[in-house]
Length: 115
Image (cartoon, rainbow, N blue to C red):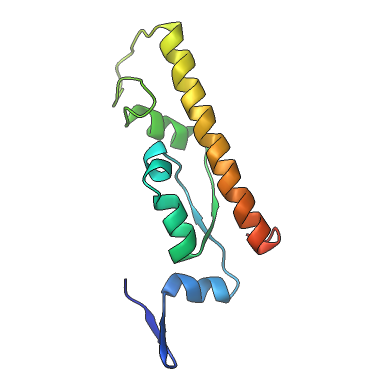
C-alpha cells in the first residue's frame, strides 16, 4: 500500500490521520468482513478504530449475501421462509454481532475508550 513520506520512513495515510487524533470508522458490517479477517486487518494495518451500523446496513448484509442462510439478493421479491431457517439466520447474525463486540472491546482497551 502507498504511504506518505515521513522523514526516513513511509507512513500510511490512515496511520497519520490516527496519530493526528482522527478516528477511522467503517460504515459496514458483514459476515464476509469478519470471516475473511479483513476487519482485523483493517484495524491492525489501517488504524480503523470503530464500526457503525443501522437497519439499512443490516438489510444490505443479509439480502446481498447467502452467509445468513437466506436467499441472496431479495430485491423487491417476498420470500416465504420456514421459522427454523429464520431462527438459524437470526442466530448467525447475533453471533456476528457478538464477534464484532469482542473486536470493538479490544479497540476500546487499546484506545482507552477514545476510538
